[in-house]
Length: 133
Image 1 (cartoon, rainbow, N blue to C red):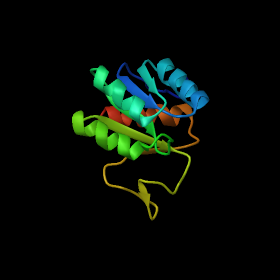
Image 2 (image 1 turned 90 degrees about the vertical axis):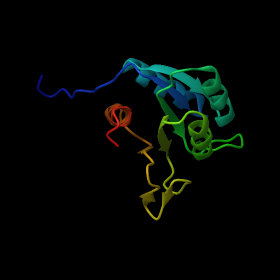
Image 3 (image 1 turned 120 degrees about the vertical axis):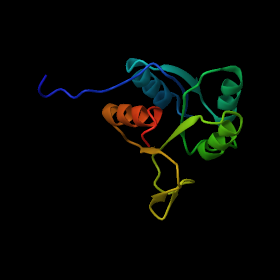
Image 4 (image 1 turned 60 degrees about the vertical axis):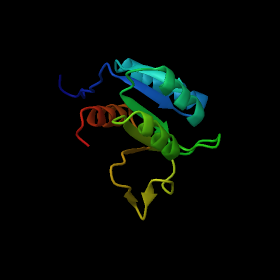
């Protein structure tokens, strides 16, 4: 259909980590609407607990800047230590943070900058899950 953009989703399991409840709920609804199975956590330590208790998480989608003593980068490092191969997508509303240095991302890091559209979210998640990063 002309004028309509195709937005691809999937059925994979995503662990969404975001400290802002409204943002987390909105993002979870978007991902669920795309067909994904979504688990939620409000902090890094809570996310580690979810990962310990849950098998088959395909993607860790985490905000970088979070309160609670563990930022998104630290969470990703811990999670990938006991879940090798776990795919990670960071989100951030800040350009200066733990993964951007002199305008460049650290090697192997995927970032979705806030604000983003549903189409941008869907495309980035699909790209990472498909291994096209």
